[in-house]
Image (cartoon, one colour):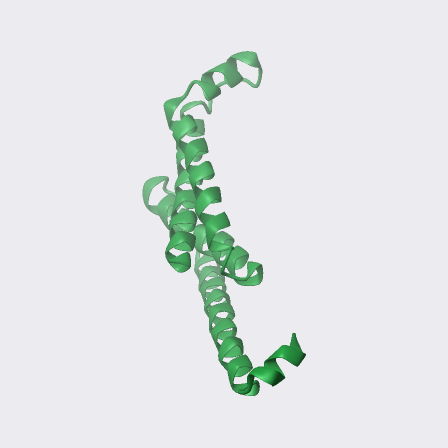
Length: 139
């Protein structure tokens, strides 16, 4: 359930960034000033993006009740980056060079290693302390 919450948080965070970029593209010719801010805060796409950030925060916070921060945070930021980069290339026409793709592959590998190491450590701890009396002294 907590991994599902983390996944929903990641997707909501990516959606928020994509929606905000979409809204700001429509305002790209506007000059910075009161009129820009008024247009921005009244834009329904921007408002939806902000709401997605709130949704992302709620699901991410729930996920962190059981997932280590050292696992959850890299997953949230890194996997969100992959989603946003892919969307940006397809929809916004942003370029994905070989170097960027290699960087994203390295990020995915790093997140996979974090999850793998987390599961391995939990299994190792349970094997190291087979008796309840030993587990109590380790805490």
